[in-house]
Length: 404
Image 1: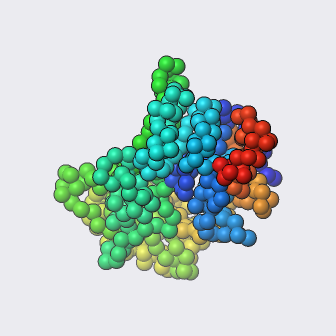
Image 2: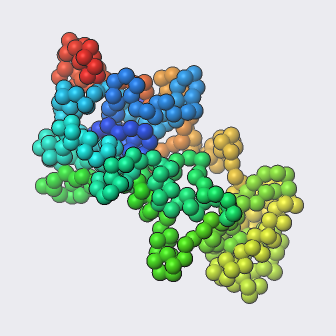
């Protein structure tokens, strides 16, 4: 059953967010706020709109990625580069609590949309400025993409096989991580405003590079205090043992973890090697890391002679910390994911219904739900313009002049 378009009890109902950002990271932050009930209006340039509309994968010429990363939003077109477009944005600013943008520093200022102008219109406006490298510094004017700040933030260097090249993941993690920090920053600023009715609005400087630096927490302190530059270790953990990816006897893949003594014991019992538990070489996680090659070899050999079903049954019986490595189709088949409705149907204007990830996290007393997937370019333009007093004739004229 398609989810209801209404969620009157969601935590952020009543919050109005203006999303004038493009591509992934900053719109990701806006989508999170929309998930929690905020009324998010996405503004795009007339014509082609946000470049993310052209991101694969596609079905019938429609970007499927677009549909999920801009879910639950309203959509209008507006050319902010033109004076009349900027004036309409100012009208919208007066009615919104949050502005999310990711233009290069100085861009909005060139269009007459400085923070002082925006705060004069709406003194309590929260402005999230998301860029690759921040609002100042020698790299501030550089374009920012996930691979760039994943590379410079240290994440790519520690990913991959020891003798191989540094590797990026199959998904732009840097964008998602940056988007999460952006949403947290907005909510933090809103909490401060809620606690002080006289407080002025906030400008949030979100650097995607710094978000990645924050993600890899131990890298800087390790180098600072020990001079060690951490290298790649493939799928083997450098801070826990045994912990790696192993292939089962029937050609499937599993991942093993567990850094505590208790979980190590459970994993050993799962493969019938209780003798390892009392071996003095393995009496702490730090000690086990010193013998990680030996331990991983033991577990690798065991998995190689057992099927995935056998391994899962043994580890479930003894409380071991094992997980199968799923492809997309297997995610849809997992009974726990099905029971939790972690993948949920959402109304879609092109395909009737699509299934996407449910809202995370969940709220017991103020439940949230998806209203719809992302819509076509300018789907709500007329309705939004009418809401700020534009007549049908004015809207027609604005459209004819390329303002919307």
